[in-house]
Image (cartoon, rainbow, N blue to C red):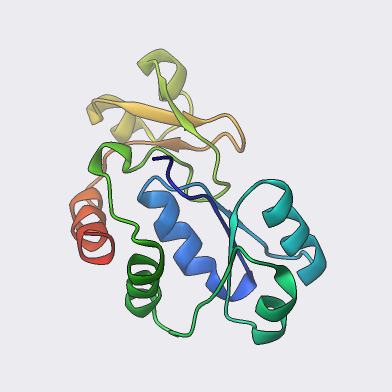
Length: 153
């Protein structure tokens, strides 16, 4: 079964970011109108996630009105309503900023784009073709993985 894809409205930016950390395709609707968000979700076969009751009522069948205000509650609603679960093999496979897919970068390609200490000590680099960001396993990764296990067990 293919993993669901999401479009998150402006009120669910944090959820979009954590879905991306977990490897889900989660576009974010910052700056777009409700009509544009609903249209994108329909055209791309995405679930529209919103906290806006009016948008949820007008958007169509693949919409979830998220009632929780906090991230843990929002993730619990997704687990309960769509049955999504975390897949650790997909963790950190998408750009946290732009949702692009991350690909392996050769050390030579990454070293000129990261701080010198990171270039000397990181073992592996991944890059986003969409926005150009470079990622590596820093000291924060263990904390993020622990949180992902809580949010999407």
